[in-house]
Length: 316
Image 1 (cartoon, rainbow, N blue to C red):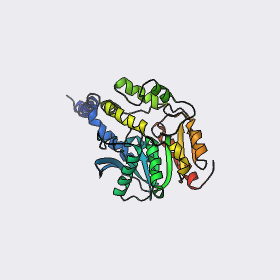
Image 2 (cartoon, one colour; image 1 turned 45 degrees about the vertical axis):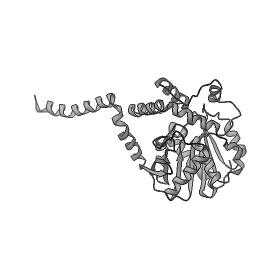
Image 3 (cartoon, rainbow, N blue to C red; image 1 turned 60 degrees about the horizontal axis):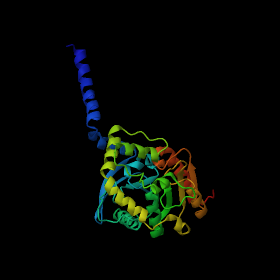
Image 4 (cartoon, one colour; image 1 turned 30 degrees about the horizontal axis):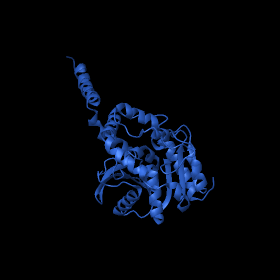
């Protein structure tokens, strides 16, 4: 065997092994891929005890002001990483897995109603010695952010709904409302086909995911399906509705609502415009329920511009 051929084999053999492992045992690559993506946003993983829950969270950023990002139901902290990337120089970023979700503790006998989640969020921030925050949430996270703002108005500098929040009654019925009326729960996947359908339901253009992360996300969703049904019922039974408290929100409010959101119809934005006339509210064209994942850089830029306008008291 020639020296050139030996060198070639020495280079190709490890690549072939890595490729084989990538396809045959993708779980090995989940943590390295997550860490690499977080690193590009200067985020690192941490955990802290909050009451009877261990809360996992990402932290990073260089700014003096704190921005807390709250995910939606059945979602998790890493859904914000690309959105956070353009903001890392302006904010100190805190991105928790809300108790009951992601890597944080889920207790089968615990309540995850919004009032309890607001209290847990307060305990989380107190444990980190955070006094004032900008809050942003998606879907369930938006509702929790609003509830926290009502409970702790002196601690919140601004409130943002990045994607439609839960708790606004849209004048036009959404696709999800029609499916719920037929006995379906479209946000819960019990098998691979339902997981793929869930992604099509949430996005106009499904973001690309490396195969290991796609399979990991599908496995977690399917494995937790029955437990998720319980949390879903808790959320649907929760008496807190943002719509009933809009006149009590005394902080600058920013909204970015996907034009093609199938979970909450975009006509709900008119409710926010009427109830929060001093807010900054915008429709994102050709976007679904999770704009921070579908168009993270654009969503971050729009959020930053609307936040400046809201803080300066500008009118739409």
